[in-house]
Length: 102
Image (tube, rainbow, N blue to C red; front, side):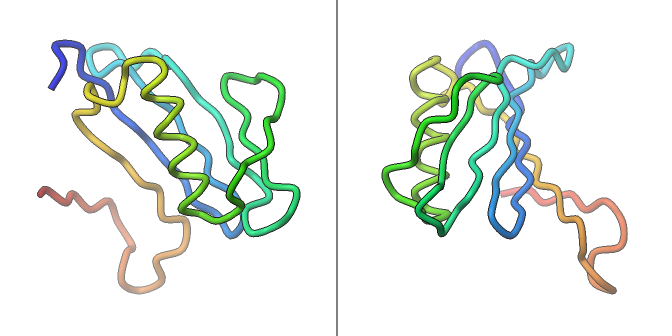
């Protein structure tokens, strides 16, 4: 783990993945973006409000790999201390905040 811990927050939708990387000490947003159009020929990734770049692989796996590559380009991949995932509809199973530890 890097001495500069960050939190990766993801929100997977039916055809998109929104994400943010926050400084763990003060919650400053270091990076954010969206992979959209997943499972379509128009799939793209936009980071920090930049121009959308087409995704080489249109699947969720391809989008997650592209996001991981963006983290790696910024030397943040080894700094991820926590990952948060938003579940918008958990039905009767997920009705409050849950903490999972590995």
